[in-house]
Length: 291
Image (cartoon, rainbow, N blue to C red; front, side, top):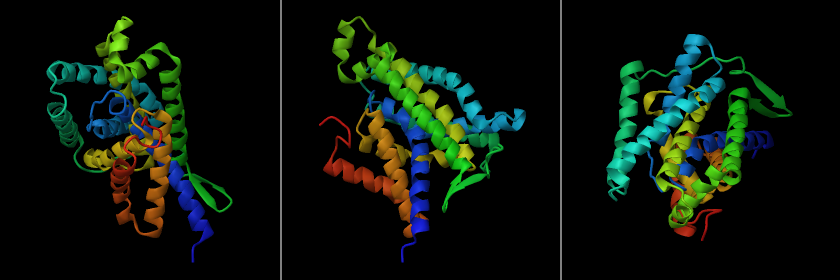
């Protein structure tokens, strides 16, 4: 017989997990959804953000969320440097489809190998006063290690959405995805705009990485588990749609948690790929994408 308590806790846990998924996917919604850059190394940067949080938390005792915010500008400039290499080597010559994909695939493994060489394959974690604490609302438990990432992810998603929709640079990023020629006629440089957008996307991984290590310990190859999830969320939400991405992330989180709770955790990794295949087959434009 279905337990109401178990069902309610699974729904709440899924929503909290989905909020974190949104933080992981929002940068990919910019690079893949709006810039058409298949950055499969995106989750590896998230793990790099987790290790930055681990280092500074261990050395100076800083809060992981604060570390993510402090590291975001550094990751932004790293993203700009990576896009310059990508543009010069692949995009400018029209070889971004296959060669560009191989570039990011190699970049993902470089990040993993560097982390393994520096810190080994042991799991690393951080300490904070709220980790291990929880609050109960009726029969529903809300662990702070999930509640804090959900709140930060919600603020990050809202901030990126407002930036893209309310500022000149944000609208230019949307324009370069929809009509590059019109943007050039207005005197803007699409390459510089895409460079900025890519840097912004990588900056979000610093914050997402700090949330990942709050939720649980990390190791260098952990990012591979999020490649399928992140792409499934972006495609399901609609290419380039930030609100759609957020709703899709919550949906994936709830479905994964329900499957793990009532069918077993071994089934949950297949959820994202199943949703991705169904979306591509039935509604390629996603929930909120343009038809």
